[in-house]
Length: 303
Image (cartoon, one colour):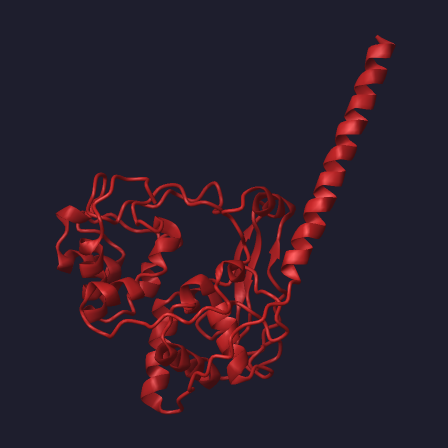
């Protein structure tokens, strides 16, 4: 019995050492990714100063979900604290104490939003620049103009961090990363945004963030890299398992405005951010609806 316990102890020590070595490797590999310095194109974006552009930039900031993350006064907040992922902390964007606004140039803002890169070239964790990369120069300029117009707010926030579990996940599953800049073509020619209109192409432009949860094909399913308690995304094509074929355009607009479906089901805003999308105009929501109608009809779960 003593001999058996001795060997069991040795085996446990060997396994514990192997795990410790593996975790150490994962830690330093992810640290290298977190501190990587990126070179981006020097995009020239005009930052307007007129009130109309600033107000339009505010609305984009709202319906693109930036306000939901950074707060109504752009003061920053803890957006998510989950041991399986880490701490998602949005920064204070103003010129107040703890804010980055006082040190950011126009070019810094462009790199930050479009590429998810800090002024020193290192990546911003969890920053959804994979969506903002596609913003037109006009829309991006208006958003930056709005950010720069907001009064200073004192609020010192720590940076986001990835938990050890999150580091392991992004190491062993290549499709999952909490560094969005790793997915952005830094030196490619920037795509041209579609013209504004009630068209499928403009609707897709407005609905870029929908693909984060509902998948590139919009047919829903379990969301990779999200917390285990996060509900699967529904199918928002007009295929099997989708509620949209029973809705009208007006039903869709009312649902986004109120957070209640035609059957009076309440959409939980922490999972379905209708509280951000409600800031779209009727014409913008009509464009999104036409885009959804135009997508291939897929069965649920094909993402």
